[in-house]
Picture 1 (tube, rainbow, N blue to C red):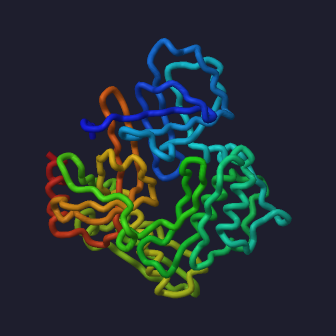
Picture 2 (picture 1 turned 180 degrees about the vertical axis):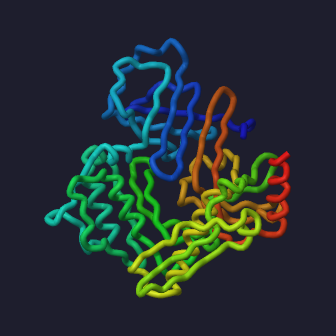
Picture 3 (picture 1 turned 30 degrees about the horizontal axis):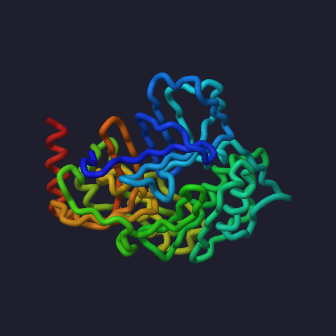
Length: 357
């Protein structure tokens, strides 16, 4: 949304030194490694040399620069002649270009997940300037034995594999952890449950603030799952509302001998269905107050919204676009709710009917 009462402050630095101000920029963050595109006014195409080792920080504020940049990253290649555009990758991309061998002599067997992630992160030499802030898993989760990559694996991919192992079986809704960069810091944090976590951003509904998005039958996620655990125990979970709307859409049977009983099999089935649905059915929020939102970590409260949509939500992705006289900050959010309200069901039906005309 366009901000008419505040001025947008954009500051770019290269290795801590002021850089020219772009005329346009786009930041996209889907919860993994963000990207940033900068466009500069014409006539500046030979004034700078940008190298892969250079750290570029982009800060955006209203009337004042923020304490932390919204984006910190680098080029994937050296640019000996500065053009009018730069395409940047988030700093954690360095871990994608760096491999590690995990064998019988150098492995992570039995380590706490957070210790293993820290150990891999600290081996990414190009990120020595970043400070790791890594949360301890609760309850404690350890790396299983015999995790081996004798031919090598990208360090960032290995960190992601460890992250996916950090599951809290005692929580039925949000059970995982997230990794992200915030300024010059690397974070490993538990994903907050918006149904109980205090919101860090509160928004009042207004014209254009909320736009409910939905998906058609071909792209609405799975609504039924079966999980096979230890000794052949099988449990299932289905979302009745989405089955009524989309018809039965079952994911492949999940088989895992480490799941000890029917109760946990049910919870695994439930979280897989809900994760699938929430990645497809979401609210889109437009507000400049979301400039500092962090996907998979920021909880947003919406008040005064129609159709029963006033609730707390978890930010899943963020896009920032700045152009001449324009600031647009858009976030997709989800909430772990099994069944939508009757009002939302009516809204879905209306939108679905309109889309078929």
